[in-house]
Length: 464
Image 1 (cartoon, helix red, strand yellow):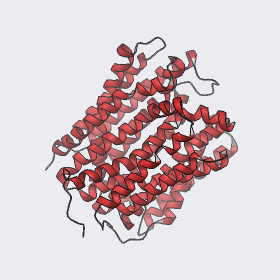
Image 2 (cartoon, rainbow, N blue to C red; image 1 turned 45 degrees about the vertical axis):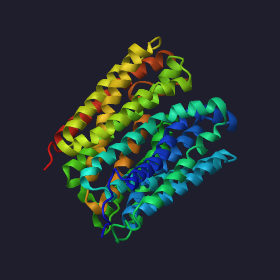
Image 3 (tube, rainbow, N blue to C red; image 1 turned 90 degrees about the vertical axis):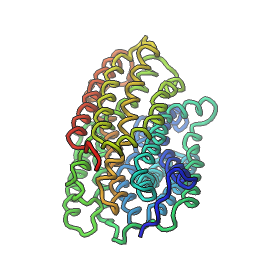
Image 4 (cartoon, helix red, strand yellow; image 1 turned 180 degrees about the vertical axis):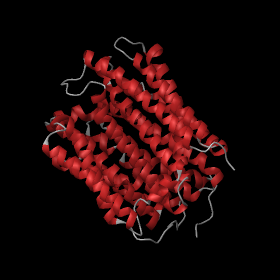
């Protein structure tokens, strides 16, 4: 039996929200803060492009591939227990990455760091569904979504500031105290018993899903440089697809599936995840290419480019709790549709971010419109995913949605430059970057508008 719900406005409730925000925020900061440090790492360790790709994407590989298992472990063994274990593991691996002596050790530890993050992130969100009453979950999730989203966007600013005064190694170690604090707060404030299910963990499904996603992600990482028609790239990609087909076949037949396919009978669950795929692909493409355009195209320093994103952080923090409560009252359809549409409009405004553009007249309006859309979208989308899943599968639902978001990012980084005519170039800059960035923003806007359409036709519009 679940323990009594904890009031959100109580001291204990605020500590629980803070623990989940600190834990997931440590992972989200790590996802973006490393980008600005890559040139320094390359100089220090004498790395080429392939080494840098694996430093960045090795983390995302295990984070995305193992996140379903992390959610399932939380459902079976207790979300608080797995969250705490993941937070401690993330802190330890972050420190070890910071002192890694060479590239091989660094990449191995990055893979382990992503695996720890896969335990932490889905259970941070599922905990909010476990400990708060239904009428307070929307606001709690809104607070989580706002601060977690802001932590993602603040990564480039933090990285640029740290590189001004210290070594790139601090970029990795800086998140460890936050993860440890999250573990301590969770141990102090969470109910003693929050195990929700005594079923067995689907480890064979986890292996199939991990290897399958790993094959596809490896193809996407290596394809642009090695060539998508290179035999080993084709073999790895085909093997990944075959393993994912085997995963779906196995999940239909096992009694304890890692991903119960019956969840996709819910129109809201399916629609929310399709919206996530579309919008987060656009979001990831924006942050990846905008940082290039601001620094290489407009000549802005890494610190200034990171600071330019602060309006998005502010709007996420301010609007997400409101949007979560709004969706609780009227349903997710209007907030998600409006949010995705505004995000798409912001993407179109980013087309004006060209060499010589003024920050106030060209960059800031795009950031504000996009930030408004993101602030209205994230919390209702997150809440819709969790609400559409049964209580005993909240962790799996959260994990799957996070996996979709991570995979959307990998797809965007690999495929959006190709679609925008930027692939195959050497040093990205000048006219190639300017034209490609504008095309990419139009494509990303289209993805957001498609997400708005999906949300309109799949989300609920009223509450009982």
